[in-house]
Length: 193
Image: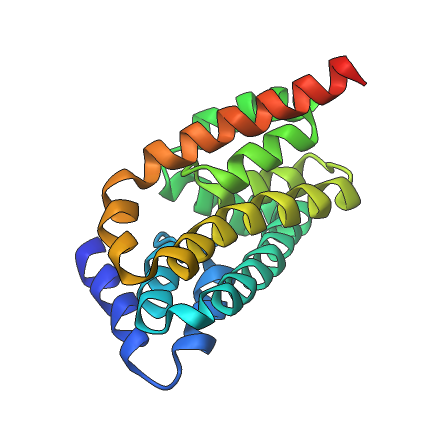
C-alpha cells in the first residue's frame, strides 16, 4: 500500500498541478500523511533545477502550516484524532517520552524532529497536546523544515540532475550528519559567546 502511495505522489511531478500537490503533500505530511514531501520535491526540482529553490520554499511553507495544523489537532482534538494518528505510526507508547524531550530540550526537540526522518507529525501533534509555546514551536519548525527542504533544493540547484541518485541513496546519512553539525554549531556558539 505504501508503494502505491509513493507512486501516486510521484505522478504529480508529471502534471501541471505539481506545485499545488507539493504544498498539499508537505502540509498533510506534517500533520497526518505517511509519505514525506521530499520525494515530490526532488522529482519537481530535478525536472526544472532552476526552480528548485522555489519548490523548497513551497514545501517549507506547506510543512510549517501543516505543522501548525498538527499542533491544533494535539491541542484541541488529541483524544478524538491525535491519539489515532500517533497509534497509526506505532508511537503511542513514545508520547510520554516526547513530553520529556519537550520539557528538557524545548525548541531543540521540534527542530531535530523537523529536520530528520523522525515522524515530524508526531511531534507537531504532541506539541499541541503538551501546550508547548506556540511561537517557539513555529520558529523551530520554520528553521528546521526550511533547512531540510532548502538543503535538498539547493543541492539540486547547484548540481542539477546528477545529484538525485546521491540524495536518494544517502538522504538519511546526509540529514544525520547535518543535524550533528547543526547541534555542534549551536553548542559552539552557546559556549563561545
